[in-house]
Length: 80
Image (cartoon, rainbow, N blue to C red; front, side):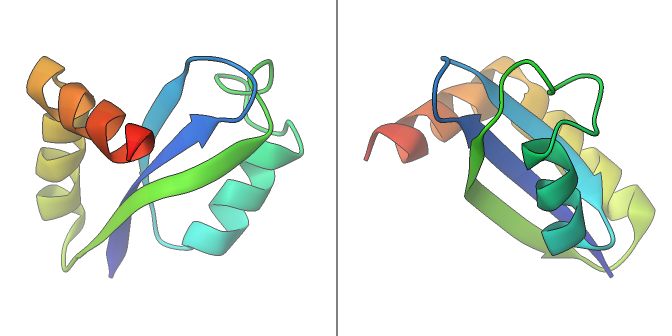
C-alpha cells in the first residue's frame, strides 16, 4: 500500500506532493528537515492524502497532484 500526500508549509506559500509507504514517518522527516527538497520550508501540515494499491498507481496520482490542475485543487483545499 502506498500513500500520495500533500503538505503545506506553515510559514511559506509552498505545497509539496510526494508518495510513500509510511506517511507518518515521511511527514516527520519533512518537519525535522531531513528531506533536502523541503528543509527550508518547514514546519508542515498534511493537507491531503490518498491510498493507492500499487506504486505505479501512486506515481500516476502523484503526477496529477503535481500538475497545474492538481496544484490548484490543493490550494483550494489549503484555503478552506
